Structures are given as structure tokens and as C-alpha cells.
Image 1 (spheres, rainbow, N blue to C red):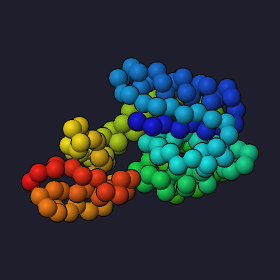
Image 2: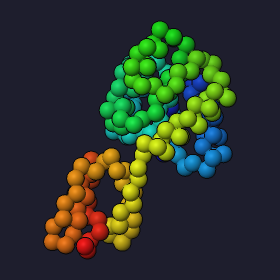
Image 3: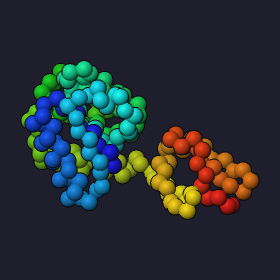
Image 4: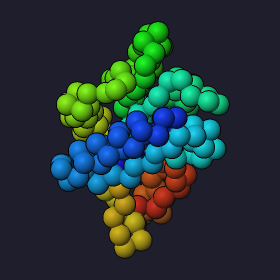
Length: 170
């Protein structure tokens, strides 16, 4: 699971990162947590995230605009906003934000929100394990564009791998 945390206040960035890491570890959920106080760095890479924790008012780009970009990369992204500014709550809800936390955030409410996010992710992500080149590869069902059969081979065309050869013999 890929998680991004973006906040321009170091104290909140560290605290959120620590609590999310503890949550994931206590539930044996493998994850990769990226945290940054520089939102423009996120725009310069093409990483896809499953969970995003975003401050709204930051230098360079606001959290709402950043959320739109992250949502374009993964339409099933579970978005969390953590901010002092309630006037952005409607904009956040328009993006189907999963939760909206005030600063300083309540840890129990964060964990409860993460519980709900894990339920959501378990329901919306359908993983397929396909055999290719002597190993199994995990593919999200939603990433499959189409499947074709040619010369006793099945080709699964996905969003990320335009042509992947799975199940070499039919």
C-alpha cells in the first residue's frame, strides 16, 4: 500500500507519519509511506497512492489541487484532509474526501478513519494474480483494459503494462 502525507508544518508531518506507521504495523499491513513538506515534489513524479493525507493551505499548490492530480492517478484513492481551515471543507467533499480532520488531529479519530479506509480499500480493490515468466504477478482488475488470445497465448493489456503475457498456454 502506497501512502502519501503532505503538510508544510514539520510537527504535523512527523506526527501523522508516526501514527500511520504504528497503525499499519499493528495490523500487519505492508506499506510504503512517503512524507514531504514540498507538495510540488509530488507533482513531479508519477507515483500512484492508495491513501493520501493532505494539508490544504501550502506553498506552491493547495491540497485541493494536489488531491485532484492524485485522484487522476488513482480514482479509488482514499483522501484525508488535515487542516485548520474549515472553509475548504465543501471543496474537499466535492473530491469525495474520506475524512476531514482539524489540526491538531485526534489520534483515535485518525485510527477510526483508517479502519474505515481499510474496509473501503478491501471492497474496491480486486486483485488478480496472473502467472507470467515463471512467477505470479499481482494485477488490479480495474487496470485491465482488455484481454486477447493469440496463438494459444492470452495477453492481458493493462493501464501500466500495455502488453503483458499471462497464462502462456491455453
